[in-house]
Image (cartoon, one colour):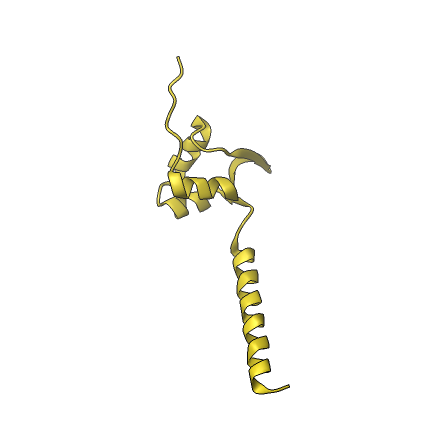
Length: 90
């Protein structure tokens, strides 16, 4: 094996490793604390968005507490477009 072949294989390995690291850092579900950090908002605000239906979220039982969790797809939507407008109901 000559030097150009080794360099080519090394470059492929580095590319695959980079893709793997990026895939691993992507979570499937985010907590309200995670989303608050990503959006620069208070965690209380994110919980209110969940409660009011401004973002799509699920409640997850965690011991005695039920905490909101937000899917990766919804986090991407929020980062790109923001939460949905508040709909007042009578």
